[in-house]
Amino acid sequence: GAGVSQSPRYKVAKRGQDVALRCDPISGHVSLFWYQQALGQGPEFLTYFQNEAQLDKSGLPSDRFFAERPEGSVSTLKIQRTQQEDSAVYLCASSFTSGGAAETQYFGPGTRLLVL
Amino acid sequence: KQEVTQIPAALSVPEGENLVLNCSFTDSAIYNLQWFRQDPGKGLTSLLLIQSSQREQTSGRLNASLDKSSGRSTLYIAASQPGDSATYLCAVSGRSNYQLIWGAGTKLIIKP
Image (cartoon, each protein chain N blue to C red):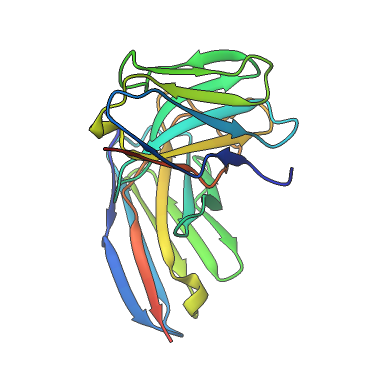
């Protein structure tokens, strides 16, 4: 596709449910990033993939958060046993090569998660 | 720990005015600084990327400057238009050159 797509766009979950958020990066992009954006705040880094390898997961807030990119393209962010504090917009971004200092990240529209 | 601050949090100006948005960061050891635009319900769009060796970048009516030593960047918007209304965020590269540290953004409203 022409840009990064994410699905679903909106998700309402009851506390304790598991959710899975999908990201389709721009075709051919090597690097993929997940961010969490709370209301009124800037995004916060969650994790980074280069192809299928998860090179950095230092931003994942707890072991309830898990991300994968098994074939080096589509990625899924899974949140187990959701809590109210997980409510946020989850943004996915991709970049052409290694996501280095001079490279722009292209963002998807985000998935807005509301945990009741 | 790198911290990024944007002032003001919100700004409303009449159409046609020139304006400046501010971004400050606490650790000058950055790889780059980027300015993004975020529209409601849409993703972030990169506007300008300034590498650490550069002092400014220009794109159309936008000009971004970087002063690493003072930990500051400004985004100058000339001849503002209602379509410029959005939230503007700045982000600096963190300890890993791909990891972005973000400000909370400035919500800009341009009144027709």
